[in-house]
Length: 284
Image 1 (cartoon, helix red, strand yellow):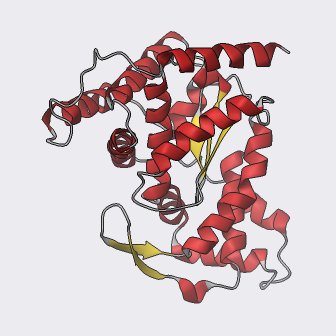
Image 2 (cartoon, rainbow, N blue to C red):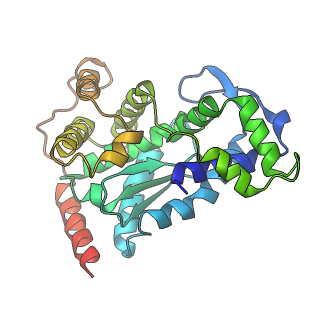
């Protein structure tokens, strides 16, 4: 079963018997009122339930505690600047396919394939900040609600509960499997980029790491499009995203003149040591 279909099933499970909780809530990033079909507690539970399956699908955790601690340290520095306090976790998984993704409620993953392509720690902070932004702004939950619609969501939830003719999990899976892969909207990607810049800066990193990251991803996608198909299905990239990130850094008073794209990353040596250790670990 496709991973995002699995995530939808977890959402359904969280919704069973709880239609009365649907209503509006304030988005912690935008401050706007928006539809909310599940509580924050349910969102956290949903992500935690789905995380082991995602971890397994992407090759499991990289078997090196030091590498895991390193990725978690960078992630937690970024998480400390988030607009939305959540139980964020950051895990390095062994898949060689370049990717990074966030589940609702806080579990965030980066693949070995993506980390190996980076050249400094501020790029790592940028991608973890980007994924943290998706969680903070509730993008994945928003996309699921939008794609399924409230009525369909409630109908499938009822089937999952067996309320209509003894529906089974298989029935639910058959319905969900016909849905297209979820992907973030371009506006969500723009916002996650901006949040990644904001969080990385507050965490003490040079935010030009975001421009470097996006430029690196675009170059790799053009060189090896098949390897990046999965990542770009869910994280559409365009030259406009790169330019928008660059303009944010040049024109926003919060960043203008305070950082330079040519400033060396003070953590570059540490990152390179970890990157080499990752390569060595994967060879074992």
